[in-house]
Amino acid sequence: AQSVTQLDSQVPVFEEAPVELRCNYSSSVSVYLFWYVQYPNQGLQLLLKYLSGSTLVKGINGFEAEFNKSQTSFHLRKPSVHISDTAEYFCAVTPRGETSGSRLTFGEGTQLTVNP
Amino acid sequence: GAGVSQSPSNKVTEKGKDVELRCDPISGHTALYWYRQSLGQGLEFLIYFQGNSAPDKSGLPSDRFSAERTGGSVSTLTIQRTQQEDSAVYLCASSLVGVLGSGYTFGSGTRLTVV
Image 1 (cartoon, rainbow over the protein chains, first blue to last red):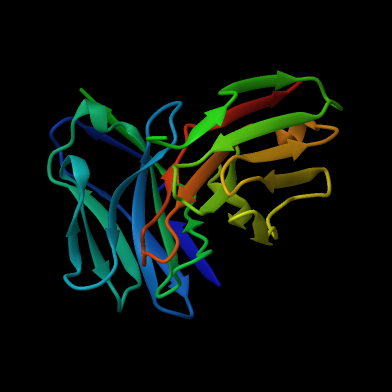
Image 2 (image 1 turned 60 degrees about the vertical axis):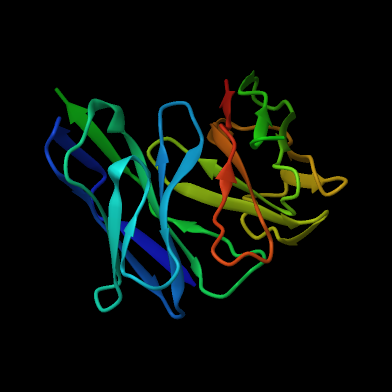
């Protein structure tokens, strides 16, 4: 079984400041990792994912995340945020190598609020 | 279709009534998932479909909840005798089977309010 912990439930930042949203996971098997974003009254949209290879992955809207196997972390970062980045962000994992029925396990989400 | 479509987008129902929530996945996506998102909480897995069968329904919270999928496409989540604790956003997602790490595409959800 897998579990995901998002260490901050709310992160307020000012516009153009850098931000880091923290995610740690626990799993007895290797996993794929994902970050999703949810804008108000919308479904979840995939930001980026780590499958293999370089541990630094780049996603949409200028976000990137770094996989750290030894620390079982997958923190999301953006060097300069915009008001439009205000949303809820979810970290998720699924067992590596499963091609069907692989349930995503989600963290509880981090609300990012960007203030002017 | 181009995306995952859910209907209705909002549903207000009286306690004790039955409700049906619909999900129309992306064409060609054989895997379909239902999740529930309660206020201030993360996403709670409910059920997974592969084609028309549900190999994993372990997340359904009680026997008042059921789901079916027909034609390997549209799925319906039914909640009988609704209770106030059923109030939540119900999210549907679909994915490609056989593609490693493909992730999900989510619909916009149905916001259910039981009064």
